[in-house]
Amino acid sequence: MLKVECKLDRSKIRIVENILYEISPTNWVIITNRNTKESKLQGNFIDKNVATVEINKLQNLLGENLSISSETNLEDDWKEAYKLHFKPWHYKDFKFVPSWEKGISNIESSNLIVSIDPGMAFGTGTHETTRLCLELLIDQYSLTNEISPNLSLIDIGCGSGILAITAAKLGFQKILGIDNDSDAIENALLNSKKNSLSNSIIFKQIELAKVTSSDYQCVIANIQADVLLLNSSVIINLLRQQNSVLILSGILNYEVAHVVKAYQKDITTRGLDCKVVEKSLGEWSALLFSIK
Image (cartoon, rainbow, N blue to C red; front, side, top):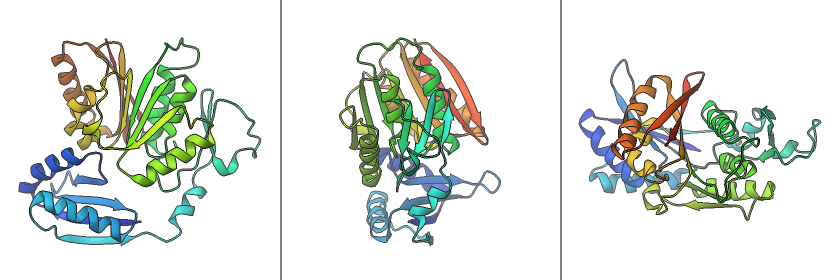
């Protein structure tokens, strides 16, 4: 795994934001130090070859070379290291279990078990942003509620597929998970197979802007706040006009008010009403917009 960073002049921030919007979802993120006001562009990539391709792509769109200030190689065995930190956990009736521990540690077979091996993808449920999404999703669509026919959901930045798989176990009939990382899609497909849901969920490597359907009853986007803000109209357009739910995560606590304001404005502009629920864990927050 390679982490690439470069300093970003203030005059270039808006230009780069617009480029990231056009190619989103993306492995690039803009990070700004609130104290010094200095910004940097950071990207995480599988290896040097992928990083080079993505750097060249961004430089071509920007029309100038990026001055890479640092490149950090993670340990070669990082793929196995996550296993030390991913232990079974549960929320209400759901148990989230590492695939290598299923069948042991007194874990009994159940249709409420979600078996996950994140591999190279993000998403075990142990990170606050993913866990908040899972909790809001389960709270909103618990199995005690009546599930309407053809309930549909899209998971933006699906990672390991944990959210989409949980949605299927909650009763969603039409599920699409998208990610810009081919390894994430491959891993999500493997996890759906581990949970006997290969025929129930579609996973695609596709850019958010290229998703054409706009009739989802639930949209989940677990991505950075800056990407959420840049894509607010695109994300809201994926929802049914009424009786739909939007779950957003990847939001730091101090970013919540800004995200709520932006999305409420876009929703009310469409003549719709919404109720907002906020849930926090540590320094992270997630939002659920119930749209009527």
